Image 1 (cartoon, rainbow, N blue to C red):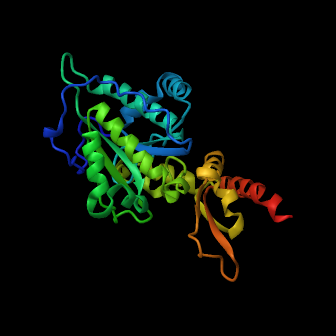
Image 2 (cartoon, rainbow, N blue to C red; image 1 turned 60 degrees about the vertical axis):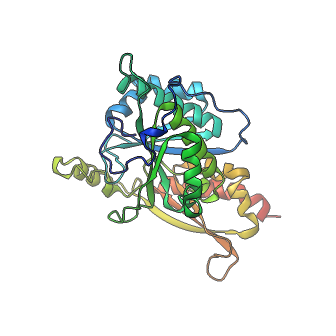
Image 3 (cartoon, one colour; image 1 turned 135 degrees about the horizontal axis):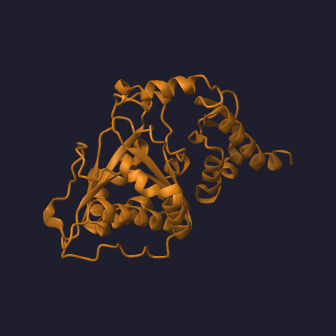
Length: 317
């Protein structure tokens, strides 16, 4: 999230005239009737904001996880979203738990970085990280969906173009601008749209899924990126690899699970990123769907073992 109104190049699309009369700063609790789906959301934080969310000895992040029931992970302090100096926070769990955790995080940052004595509810930006292939579901035909999201939430919502200057980057930034209440309503609506998208459910990965070379992209001059890359290149276990295995088309549902629960769990536990090919896209000469696993060798082995555990009892019948 770029607080201090960071110059990110992604200005909000709703203007100030959409502000409603002042409302309580804390956002209302989410309605409890969301379908129980596991999901995740990623957004950007400056190093200072990340430190605030972690707290002394991890006390704040642990407290937020306990209060919300969601899992909160951050990229390390030298792992920045490509083209920025911001770290990535990933919140995962049931939809309502994720929304509670995001509300706790944004409320703390608002109180710590933005609130002025006696001032009105401040408007600030949060930048969500969304896979390029999922942005169409937020935009809609002729921009119909994004317009309705803006009207419903009164927040400004702007989706950045895909930055082609970073090979292997398939994520875009969705900037939400408004008061905390407006932001939380917009994030809730966006998350509900994304939770319907199987590609989004399958795209869950570590908080920092990008090639190692991006880590020090903006900081090459101070040597941080270089040192880290050298350390990583010496450790084959930690280097990012990719393996594709075949799973029978009729068994792919066991890997995905209801509402994407199984694939989400496998990815979370192993630390690997898992992508399943579209229907009809099979391993050459078979009717097996392609399951591509990306991560360290250790993560890939763990994910393969978990997938095998899901599928093998059925395959042996």
